[in-house]
Image 1: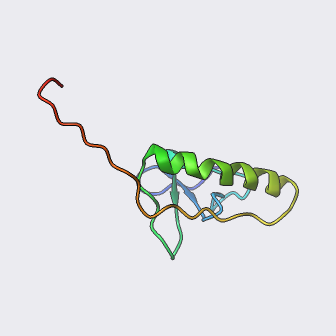
Image 2: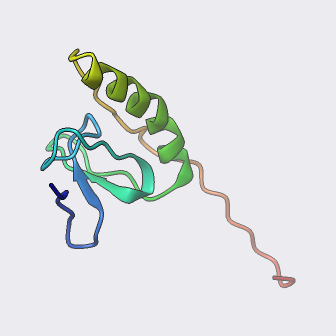
Length: 88
């Protein structure tokens, strides 16, 4: 079975980082779009991918053990660093 993607090609997942079309597939970070009525999918930035990692691992283990999955709730905002220089 394949996995559904959105119009930009991102894997469609629920807040447990589980594919909405194939429950045995999980995705996190820049390759997925979280579909949840309570929040928008976070921007494609490393800080969100890193913070979703522990939830992804926990949910993979819990899925295999047939236990309750943990929702990933992204942080509100990430720090942005802007470099301005004429040397770049």
